[in-house]
Image 1 (tube, rainbow, N blue to C red):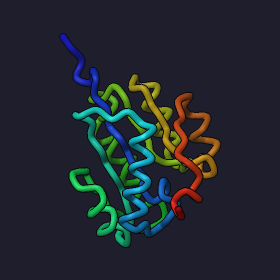
Image 2 (image 1 turned 135 degrees about the vertical axis):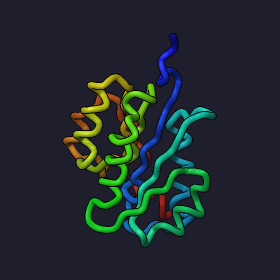
Image 3 (image 1 turned 90 degrees about the vertical axis):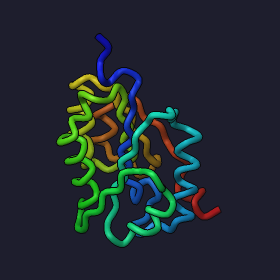
Length: 152
């Protein structure tokens, strides 16, 4: 019998970390996602969960239609919303590959748990944003260009 997770991928995106902005514009989110798509294989059945603080809700929602958008205020609010969704949704049982789009050390424990549970874990980050704890939690890291590219 085929495993439920075979061939399935989920992308957990801390879009504020990827854009290097606590309130990214729609244009910044779109540019970041273009860079993401150039570097990360995305299948037609891949799922996306994106978490933001309330200030970013509209700009991110406009840029990323069709994703599951989580909104939580406070320090590490978006991070905790993503981690909780991953654990409570048992993505370890449902996906062969998990892509964590963030360089935040908050996700180190999640990455280690997922890797131990079986899914292949990839971290996508800006070089200057990657926390050492997250860097050591996985061996598969994809870098987006430095944030200076966002100004272009």
